Image 1 (cartoon, rainbow, N blue to C red):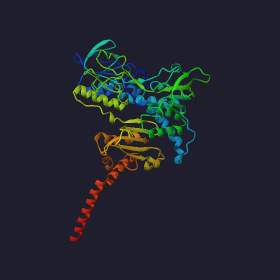
Image 2 (cartoon, rainbow, N blue to C red):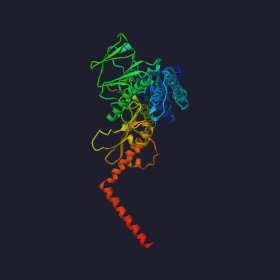
Image 3 (cartoon, helix red, strand yellow):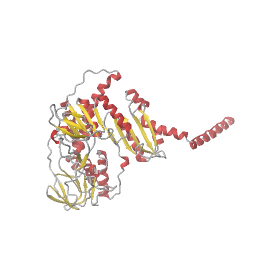
Length: 507
């Protein structure tokens, strides 16, 4: 679960003070800032480090706390929570390997303490002090653009030569009847929970809903997931969705796909009840809403700056991340590109380099990795196997991967998608550490390598990446079976035999 941008709803943590000293709003040499950055999430942080490293006078303005959603409400807390849930899942499955564990108990207070301590440990990397050490200036406040090269920070005027908007996105909460009356949870405020919900209803079966739904189920909640699409994580391949559905069934999660929540009756005896359009009802204690995100662009005065917005509120950018105002750039979630922390970080570096150095680097949306951190993980990038004709697809079930056999986790697969020339253009992996196994395939795609390059690299045995390697080997075998290759190899073998025969006679 990965998002970026300014955090408006701080998470409770060991770092409770959201107020910090601001640097002066006037550049050291006076005049205009070379580079103004609005938003201290991943995109803004990377951009500030990059621009300051190039020697540009750089001011980053953050409304709440630097670090953005990734640190406070996204990647960091969610993966800390998932780590605890994963241990529970492993303990429950241990008997399959001959290890018998007694009763498993979960102390939710201690789990959340682990979440907070993880945030605290990582926070200094994203802090104002770290930005200042890199050469950037940092101020706390709200930015309002007043012109193409001017803005105010809490009412104080500033000017800039170029600017980057990186205020991220926030969870979307639909206006369903009765929903506001039950204090809905989102990925922003779920971290403030002090008690584990006995019955948790998750609205939305995308990556965030699936990750948190499985985590809370394993920690002890009775979880129901309601998803309007006909399958979970509908942005991934159907086999990946099937694998997650099977895992959730084993975890005891009640998955309702192809149905819509129409309203909530908050005052039923025994607690609130969700009404679905198939006529069924779901009683619950808390509801977690995970149906998408919306960009934080409505209160920035972008119209005064000449920055055009899409109807969705996302900022219009070209492939270099420049907006309709050539002096202003945008990065991260608010561009409408894939809403991941790694996307935001790449955007921040690219936009700052283009702005400060005048480069013409472009984004590569087909080379953005996606990982859903459920058990099993689902990882993918690039062109899907069924997206167009002429693709070559090799899928290796993990029943053929020795590491999967050894660990008793064979319900997954590794798939490579190749173009007609055998170049890697996509991949899909379902299984433990799928995100790590994806990296090799992604590198091959980025470098324009053929599957035979992956097959030709020595791989440690036995590892989970054997799945990717075997998929690449499958293409190598297919190449050897082709008529032209057979003719060449047969000819070489004939020449070799003749040469050896002559050597024997002259010896």
